[in-house]
Structure formats: structure tokens, C-alpha cells
Length: 77
Image 1 (cartoon, rainbow, N blue to C red):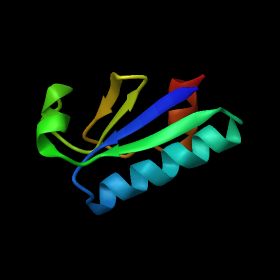
Image 2 (image 1 turned 90 degrees about the vertical axis):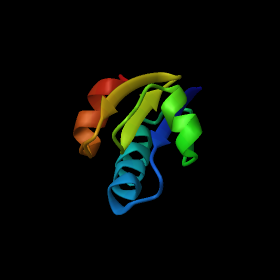
Image 3 (image 1 turned 45 degrees about the vertical axis):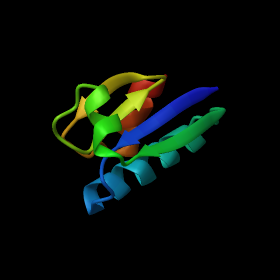
């Protein structure tokens, strides 16, 4: 099971990234868990200073932008 983490405080960009990540994972028919990390101290533990950010299985993949579902699929595959 892949663990997809959205790092952000809940802004509109964070929500868009979460939606796109969920869409991408479903389209790939992955077994996944989507976790929203909203606590600023938890976000900082990832070394992320700009949100939103996308992490997969604890590894930060993208910081500071909203990727499309297609771009996220490339990361998840």
C-alpha cells in the first residue's frame, strides 16, 4: 500500500493537490492511503518550508505547487 501524504495547512492549493493525488491513485488502481499533514511542526519535520507538498511513502516528491493528476501518476508509477 502506498502512503500518499499532502503537506499543507488546508489552503485551496493543498485541497486541489489532495484531490489530484486521489484521482491519480484511483486511476492507477493503486492500494493507497491519503493522509493530510496539517500540523506545521509535522510539515517541518519533512524539511518542507513551502506548501503544498506531496510525499509518497515518507519521501517528499514535490514542494510548492499543485500537480495535475497526470503528473502525479508519473510519480506514483
